[in-house]
Amino acid sequence: MCYRGFSLFNNVMNVMFIVDTFLAFLRAFRDENGLIVYSLKSIRRRYIRSGWFFINLLASLPTSLILLGQIAASNKPFGSMTCHGQIHEHFENPNVRFVLVLEGFKLLRLLRIKKIMQTSELMSKFWEGINVEIALTIKFCYMIVLVSHWIACIWGLIALQQMESYVHSSLLDELNWISNWYNSSYVEGGLNPIGWENAIPRYWLCLFWAIQSITSIGYGNISPVTTIEFAFANFLMLLCGIFWAYIIGSLVEVVQGLSTSQEYISRMNDANQMVKDFTVKQLPESVGGSLHKKSSKRVRRFITNQRDVATKNWSESNASTLAESYPTLSILSPELRRFCALHLTYSLLETIPYLSSNYLSPEEQAEIAMQCVTLEFSTAEKFSAHPDLGRGILIFRRGFATVSRNVPSKFLRWHKDIKDKPIDVDEVLVEDDYLEQRQLVFHFVGFTKVFFVPRSAIMGILEKNERAWKDCARWRYFKAGLVLYSMKDSLTA
Image (cartoon, rainbow, N blue to C red):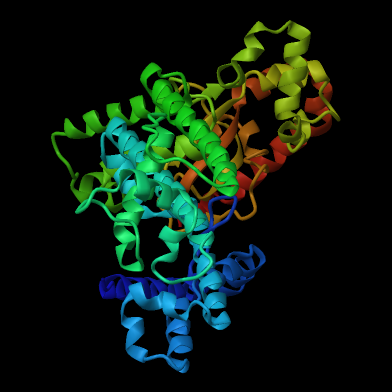
């Protein structure tokens, strides 16, 4: 039986992987802050240092073409390569066998599956658009098929490796599980696993054993014979048991809703229902702007980003306090609660001079920490003040933003390297009435998570701590007032 179609497909895939391996030198990436890096120097350095270039290169070796060249250089007819069923005639050639060993490095491509699943725009659209229960069912079915295929290939390879020669009758002459099955269960005209030309029927027999092992059915008509087969069968059946337990456990978890994934499923299904109920699928550009045309996509992407990179706790409100993000705090003693709050926020509060340990006691820092909240924003959102908490200091934990003033202006200022650094430390001390149209406005680029210190909490602490106000905060208050006054004319020009 000839497999020219498979050979063509294999060569096309090899070419695609080789091209993709080198295209990665030109592919932008997001850094830990969510910034898209376009610098070719940074892209190449990251790609090589990560080791992925060498892994991809090794997995993309054109072994089929190399094998063809080795066989063409042998004394046997070149035409014998056209059928996979005749490749065994060249197995005695050590060069051919070495190339076939290199073929095994293509398994390294499997390492890219997780990365592709996480970064693929197509997969993101699939997960965000389909009913999540259906998507999970597809995922588990795919995993069962994939693992069954791997186990079937290993089980068949064990029998082939016990052959002393590569002629078609060796599989039947040697003692192995295939010859044992053939002698006891083969029916004339039925499935025949003997012979290189029967690779596909032999695969179905191997897959049959793999599936019945995974599902613990075990008909008993296929069983190991030799010592090495018993050893590998024990190992493979243990793997099957662990894998099947994982599948069953995951399905039970989905049904009972005991994990964060179930919360994601619930939220995504609610979002899909809301999107279906939109009376207008796309708002006019005059209403929503060019960035708000695809609101349905932004809603789904925001929920997915929350699951992947935001807080592990799903609160009902976007503004989650420490107690909401970490429910354990609510059951601790007051003293232990203060210490835990400091552990969670100390490094962030130390970046704000008048809220640092130079001026505030641990009790005062813990008090303000419990009033801080975590806010999350999607792409193209704007923020100047919280509707309930008012103005405050933003400390970026992920993502970044541009900053402008609350007046018509072409001026946008980029803040770089702002992770865990406070913004608006001085101006937050100035009264709301004085700011008027000079207030800072944040324009978020990409999914962003910030630690928000409300102005009300800051002023409450400063009223109690005169030293923090007199020695630090009031000078920053005067400085911010002068700066805002001096820019009044330039902003309105």
